[in-house]
Image (cartoon, rainbow, N blue to C red; front, side, top):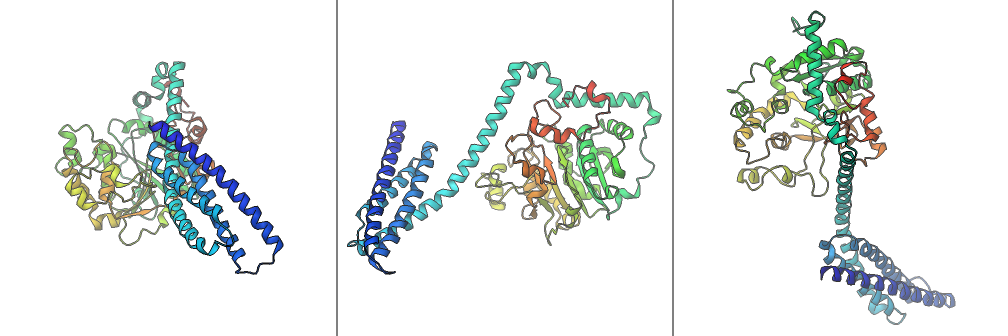
Length: 493
């Protein structure tokens, strides 16, 4: 029945549009003939009639176009389609009744219908734009599904699972690096006797990366160094799990940071304050909460980890730097902002309501579900403002409240970040951070080429075989392919 009604609505729309065009063309012909035989002055009934008729024609055509668009949407748009048809039919009827004798009586009615048409079309525009975005997202999901389906049919997904399974490939690389360390321990430096002064110099450009992926981190460092105007002023603080720290040391001993860039390699054990007594993160992990990933949550301790620093840029390990990032230290954060990040909302999507449980009374009272969310990937943190606003204490309070996972999904660190820096996040210009290279095959090339940082967020990571071919070279060109362990560990580069 619903399909029959939609088909009937489409036929009525087509018939109404054809009749409207015929009637308007006829009236236009008659009026033009009348105008040719008389020299009507400005403001005469004939000129007023022409203006009124033109308005009716224009808005009837607009609504006919929206009618055609609405026919392609889902059943939820049926009511809107009926409204378009109704207004279009009324305007068509009014246009057919227009004449020199009736222009005075009908002008007011036409204006009222035109006003209503404008209101309806304006209100529909946002809905249509949102539907277009939904369609693009649907196309992206479909494209990824098709790519995975082709991989399964070709036998790639099963035959080469180790090539794109992150744990196996990276574990292999770490083991090879550890083996090299054991075989040639004297060639690999251990813990430095004292950190170089650059690691605590607030006048330099400091980055923090939390990762156990040594290959990805090497790409972040190499790309940032090549893009920097003054590479020696850039300092990268890499924090990894204790079991991976020796592998990182072997990599950067064999392949030192390029162009004089500084890299400090750290593990959790380098921060004695991180214990279950102080940190609810450590306490929940010790209590068996497997959804809480320590490396992901360490970002909330930046001021304690680097007490001498004033500003730090947090980078995810799946980014590539294409432009000098020194300008991020000149971003005006304002008097109260702690974080600067790319805001990701559009329409009703990617707002706080998606990430937090607004059925909880505390969440309802403390946050707005319509507030625009932001993203990790490139974040500028003012550590002085962080300390002043006591953001770490806020984070601890939220973690204690979410011990049973009722406020947000603890497997993700974004929701608690949205809560911790609520009202304290400055929108970062979109040219600094372009996202989606790990799930969206339809990003505009000009957006990618103009971005300071491109972000492979999503499942199609550039070091995996399932990465998008059109983006993969943007990452692989920074891989040090002379490192012999990469081919042994079956990375699909």
